[in-house]
Length: 284
Image (cartoon, rainbow, N blue to C red; front, side, top):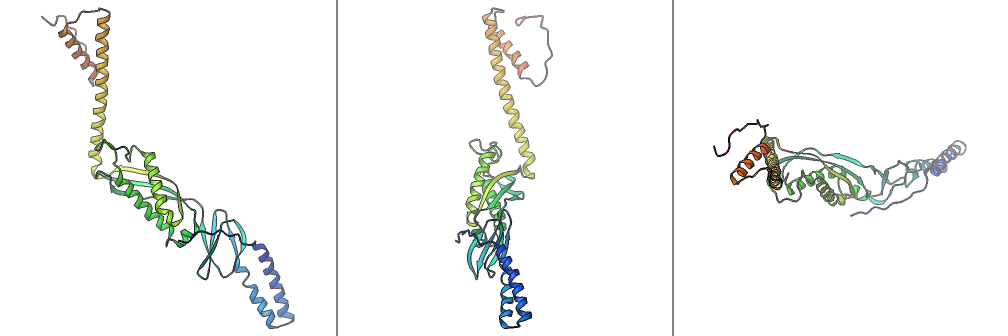
């Protein structure tokens, strides 16, 4: 694979001055002394100007001479190179790729929609020009392949795979780092470096979105109930211990069971309770 070779050609201002001077001398020769030398000098001056190139900041020129790569000009300014060289402009600015939404299956087979935003930049101009046919199209295709592979490697969340250490929804930072690493490996052939890669869209596919939403709601309710029960049991235990320590009331096992039942109903219920005044006892 062709590797980048940076060159610093001479300034183009000297060539521009030489071009103007040559035109003047050739015109004088043609007027005063019409001769073959004047015609040849005039034709020679026309080869000076095509060799002048302008390189803007964060741009480069890849030069080839008769099919041979001669070097890359990365320094911005006005330069003169061999007029017979082919000069291809390659931007060194950062590109932003907003990937389209892809419908793929996660690692456990659930259809999901996923998209990524990728920031990339050309580091090796020779590889970008000579290693691939079209480096922009190459980035687009390889980015899509990397996002698909990432989605197939991890589950959407832990609802169906509780043993998963990384999920697409919960491990955003880790997923982004893995995507960036894979993209750099895929795009290294084209001399391209990925500066940042992040998931911009992630959702269940429409055909299962409603069902998965119900599953998520059920999981949330179960988790909330579990937390409420744990807290209620702790509060009941604390209440019984306090009553026993301060000898407020003597409770036998049956009264304790009734109090525990009432407290759990009050603490775990999802509605406000209505007080009931009991004028009797548990035994009459």
